[in-house]
Image (cartoon, rainbow over all chains, first blue to last red; front, side, top):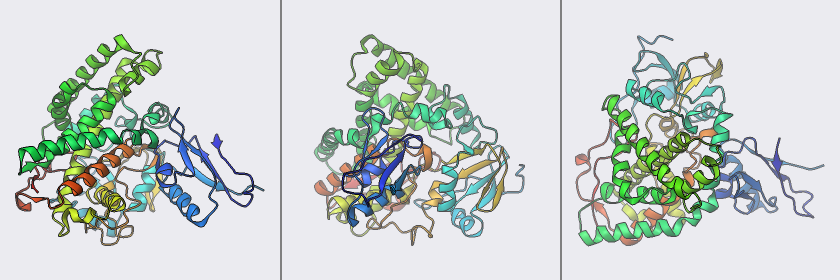
Length: 80
Length: 402
């Protein structure tokens, strides 16, 4: 699975946002719902994860983005 | 599957309301058999969860050449089969994914937002002209048709002199009541004109200011795409940008105007406009028969055994009126949270241009509410002529005063 993720130092407890680029169709719903946490590559239009959600408000936005994704390409993973 | 004794699809609708049969089927059997124009049976799926499931499931093909693909009318199937080469909306993965991804960069959130000043300028010009001519105006013909045509054509690189030519032919192409020949001939003429535009542009492929320029330079010249494929893709973008947005704007405005609050419902600003636009997309779901699929394998949907080669209609405008998802679904409520509607479909074929369509609608309604807050219908609702014989629902004219 080709994926991109990003994690800020010091956010050990925050689940990392993972995008499955084999599923992503560039619908842009993640960016529309949570622009602080997702962007789209200018080259191919597919989504790229930015910083993980650290506050409750941010988590709601990320969850909305996940629910809006038409191909379920977004997941959250807790690193060990 | 033979369908001699089954209910005949499609059913008659009335005004805003989808056919009454949809709700009946959804209650009793959200996966039910109907008879299509060619006599074959197909499965009609009417609940939100199951429509979403079918649209996400790779066992269902969107290719009209797949055995079992449902025939809404005989002419429509002839038209789709005559589309050579096929565009990505009619292809299945992995080919679909490969071709669609060549164009996702054109429709990113950031790229669409860059178009906002141009979209605002087009809206401003058209409303200026309407105000100068004075009331009444035909919102459909004077605004809703030229607005997306101008925006899309500029973005693609279609010369202004060709706007009317494409408007007329795209209308004919989505007609379901003209028999098979007129839509096929309209499609042939569109394709010929597009090919001529592309060939003329091949002389100057360093011009990357519009989508045509970028497509020629990046795909056609290096040989990733044939000229035929480029023309077909461009035609798809033209079609997708014309009829849908024009009719969504028109029916959306109509539903606001027959509400007692009128455009006042949008007075609270940006979030009110956003909500109202999503509700318009949910409530009107103007593409009447999309979600057409054919089963590539046996599949269980909602406990019903669908066999390889069966036709399936994942009926988006039934899903968007599902009370399990949207309470009191037949009421137009511009303040409701319509999140989760399937107005742009779902799954890998979800609309590539949805960001642009949303932005066009938001800009248009915000400006209409600002400039003409007391707008009203200039005729009675019962005088409006709904276009029942079209793939894309709408009205022929929408007379307004302000």
